[in-house]
Image (cartoon, rainbow, N blue to C red; front, side):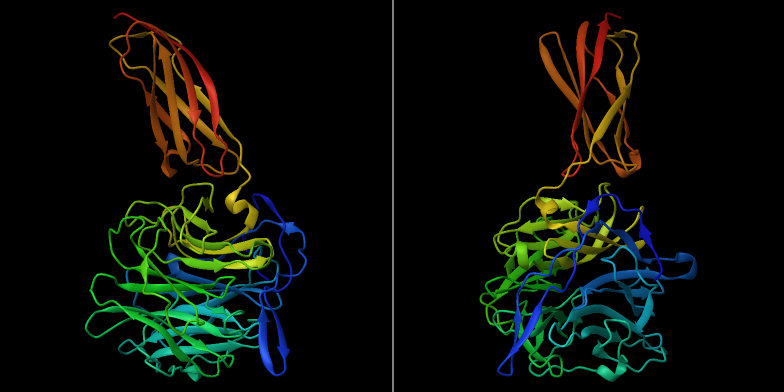
Length: 497
């Protein structure tokens, strides 16, 4: 296999066998929500399955990933010929990893239709048959040379190495089928309410411009498909797109959709609902989610095994509208009603956009996500993370150093302190530096934020002070994964002048 791994940064136990065990009883298939088999010890993996190459007009977007019954990770993405539009000559490509995401095969095209747009990969694994199923949508383009249109399903019977022909798998689900786009991101197989059922969320838009959220499901391993839950926006104010689903331990299906709205404030850009009949209908209409993210695609994952009862959601966590940075994983122990502390995937404050989650074993997960140094269109990265770290991450040490003049400062001047924050393994620590000055019976402070372009170096400027001696203290706030640091910065003498 072609190695495209970044150097591992931290230790992790990677885990072995499949996520779901299947049994057949009296001719009826039951998919047990059992924990994966015993873990195998390895290293935490940080890798890049797909890297864009603008010089050859090749960009990768829209990640999706599943874990096969044999433990292989199969990642998917759109390979695009342009980045200025969502309509172009797009193909769906895949890459495989047999070592928990540390190394990946070279990307291979699995879905192509001339110069038509083939988009929105939505894979899922049938734990009963062992097959990998891949949905995608073909959008015709004039003069493309392609022949497809609409929804297609491809399958792999060899652990994701090869897939059936794209155009041989046209799908038109039975029921009130309304077209639209799949996922993107993984679909699911149910194990409680309707054991063995395959379920894929979609979003659609009517000819009148109204958006809707619905799903399709199969009870015969993908041979036939039916439409299920369906909610159309009747107000014109909730443009549903890009859905994700997860089966909770009690059998409820958690459904979350993005609200497509530029400038949406964090916490207003997602709608959630629950299905209690395996995705056939909604227990109640969609309502606003409390998840504190802006309008962007995200991925839900309900853990099985040791950490059953935890619901994960990956998305960029920067709260600035229209800004996609700080890829994070949120954790809920209340079935998505509330969300606790988030885990930032990168130590640095980097760009991040679309993502997909996969369970690697009983106590580890992986996230496949768009990221880069300047923009999130540079590469699709993979990171494996212990589940325990999501709520109680091991902290990385930080250090503070400073420079300032040793001479007294006059009352007509502003003293300045140059501060450098160091964190092992990264060049641009995020967070805030605070300079506290205590003297003349008062204690005050000034602070600056660290951004990616600062490379850990900032200058703090004090206001003009009255004559006297001021004791200086520096504090770096750290982040959820970086340990704070504090150090004395000496005494500043201020004289009249």
